[in-house]
Image (tube, rainbow, N blue to C red):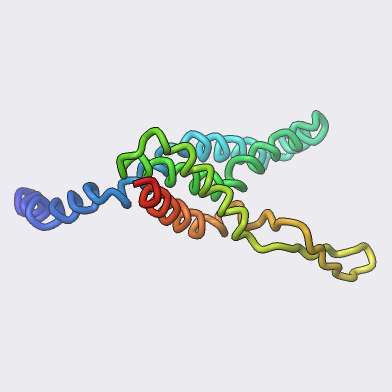
Length: 166
């Protein structure tokens, strides 16, 4: 056990400390820590809505609780990219030394995220025909599909914003 502990302390701890001291990685970590309650809330309500007991599912349908429980996952896990972009931008702005401007940096990041979303969606009619709708935002990129873009925006915008303010 002492040999493994020695290897961890000598080789892995310096790498872990370098990652922890990196302000960008720290901002991402702190951003995900900020949205943890939202993620947990979405997970709990998803669990409540998807328990596969026949009596429980019929109870949810009769009382219309299934609809209410589905709303919670729509505004938590299905919109996780929005929370990530705001939280990472907010934390990185603070780490760059501009605590009073953190809200504005997060807001600008959120606006830029919406501007970079694909414009237009396709809708299928009852006849099977697919009709493109040009002035609509696709909500599929507000969830996990858009999280990587949210991380990039949450890092780039505070760097530019803080550089302009200096």
